[in-house]
Length: 92
Image (tube, rainbow, N blue to C red; front, side, top):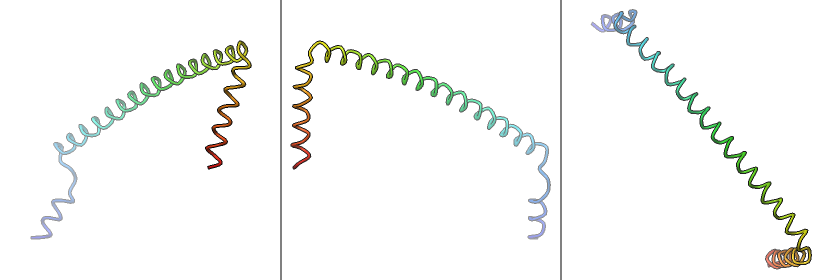
């Protein structure tokens, strides 16, 4: 009786099973395409955000440079104060 179970389990897939397997494989391929499309969309969005952040950083740096050129004494005093605070915090 056990031999009969093993023989029926090892035979080739029937046409309905083949059709189900084909459907599953088609669904898997469709999911792969959709995941790839989502990954591309996320990548493009992240790239856009990175570009925007770089532009903002460049603008802030430009403003900082202009302010230092307009008020050099104030800038040096602020830098000295920050350096002093960092030195005090590090020495503790």
